[in-house]
Length: 569
Image 1: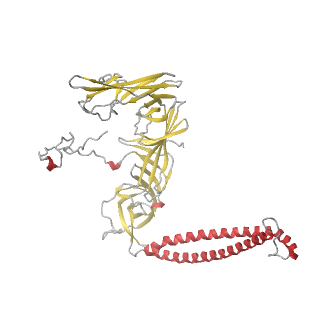
Image 2 (image 1 turned 180 degrees about the vertical axis):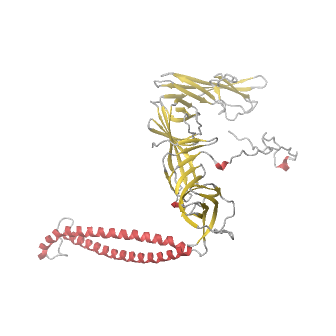
């Protein structure tokens, strides 16, 4: 059966036949909820749904009308394919008038009349129940009052007001039957109370349904429009025809989520990859073959066009007329850059890789209702062999943070998303896993390891003045950090600390210790080194029980009559 694309034409109120055109000899109407979901491909911001429509047709022309389709459907995305002795001659997307509106209003009116009668009967039952409850309550109170009056709080007989002394023997007979009668009354009261609650719940349901029908009764008589897909077929012989109708809907998408479980004793990392699917298309995807695609159709398929950046000289106007102060502007001013700112296990999915995206085929059929709630599906479980290192920034936190590093040796690309991190079966934190391609290295922090101790000692600062005519001030700063590895195995630690960076030619900063070697082309980065933030970064290897003293020593020199911002003087 051939595939016919949707005709790009204005929406029509109803299906019309051209003059002289032969009407289809047979017509089948099917509602979308009655069509089996064949497959769903979910993108980050939309989804492509394919439904299976099965119809029995006789030879000749036929029209299949698909009703109750999603309001978020993209009409230009409809495709039809299928199996059977027939060919598709036309596919259309139309708006038709719903002719059953008057019948629906009449049915609603009849239902309202029936509801009102049921509500009246329920209210009468509830009133009778209330009266019965009141009588039982009064009887129980009378028994309680009569019994309480027989004896005073101190145990003395006070029956003169209620009984004649001659009939005192009757009291004992009463006491024998009192408990039995009051228990029976309380049981009967509980049963009546239960009936009352049932009646109240029934009234709530009846009134809710009555409220739901009111808008339908108050609607104007103008026709209601419904979107439908029409498929015209030329059937060669009598047979059961299977149509695969595909369309793209918005209000759907998926995001990644991960569980990272690390075992420090076994030196393993297990990444459980989930996809969280949400949709509010108005159609439930039941028992669907689900696929998650990493493609992003909303970004577009072509690179943007870069326009010419044109510069012009600003006329030399009077600073007061320009609203300025006459002072020199930032070097970026006038170029449009702005001013500089300060500082559960399941079978793994199958992966299909295209040139620019991947598709994860979920192994088990899935139900995704149109409730706009997140539904987690299992993509894969990946076992990795990590290495462990430590990071410490003692100026901000005197701790060593354990970090696991691993290479994604699977065929699954990791998209950026939230991740729950577990270390030795204990929850550590929630973090964000950055995008990781296959065969790319990534890392995640596992929290503080107290077995690596870090002590950031108070800074030593010395001041001196130099020069005869143009005096300058020189401050010498010395910062010492002690690091101790108390573990029974070696530890690799990346130590980071600040060294000031001068933003003025009159201000000179000289790093004396450690000595930073110059980077040679093609050679590995020196250790220690200055990173992109001008901070000292030092990779240290400490053996079991080994300690290391790390010293940062630098001088700051500037004219004696100047003040320095950020030096903490």
